[in-house]
Every structure is written in C-alpha cells, then in structure tokens.
Amino acid sequence: MLKFVRFVCILFFASSAFATANSLDITYVNPDTEIRNLIWEKRPVLVFSNSHLDPNLKQQIKMFASDPNALLSRDVQVFVDHTPEPNSNLRKRFRPKGFLIILIGKDGQIKLRKNTPWSAREITRVIDKGS
Image (cartoon, rainbow, N blue to C red; front, side, top):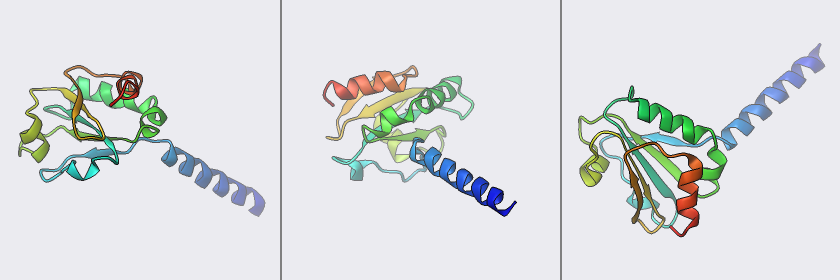
C-alpha cells in the first residue's frame, strides 16, 4: 500500500510539473503594470477588453491555451487587462476601444493590432515572419 501511495504522489507531482512547464503564463494587469523592461527578452501580447465576461476575451484565452508551447517557445508573455477603470498604464499608452489584441516585438515595436481573437498559430506566423 505504501508503494502505491508513493507512486501516486510521484505521478501527481510529475504531472503538475509538466503542466506548469507547458502552460502559458498570463499576467493580469494592474494600474502600474509596465512592459518596457521586457525589451529584447520577451514578446508581450496585450489583450484588452472592457469586462472579464467579454466573449472575445474568453475565446482568446482558450485559443492561447490550446497551444501554449507555440507561444512559450517564442518568448511570448501574455498580459490581460479587462478592467477599464482605473486606467492602467497600458490602457493609457495603447488606447484600446473594446476588445483588442496587440503583439509587440522584442524590439518594443507593435507588430500586430487586431480587434478580434487570434489563435496561437496566427500569432506565431507573424512572429516567424520577422518580428
């Protein structure tokens, strides 16, 4: 019985470590969030909506979650801002109107700006083309 319990514990911890390694890190924005320190290290993807209930936001999160490794392997870090008030630093800078997704290259320049959800595959195509 003890061997079985050890086996289950090992299996549980191994699977949770695997899930963590293969899951996309999503940062929920606060008013002071900045992305300037990510230049040349990460590719920020900013996802804006006016509510956490926005169907586009829910669809976008699902689309990213369906292939997190594609984004992780390209150093993508996702930031979600679903609270228009108070205005976050990112909202002041990018001025979204409703749902908006923005891909920023490692050089700090905007590479993509869309008002509809995009799959991880579509995002990685833009990255692979030269962002």
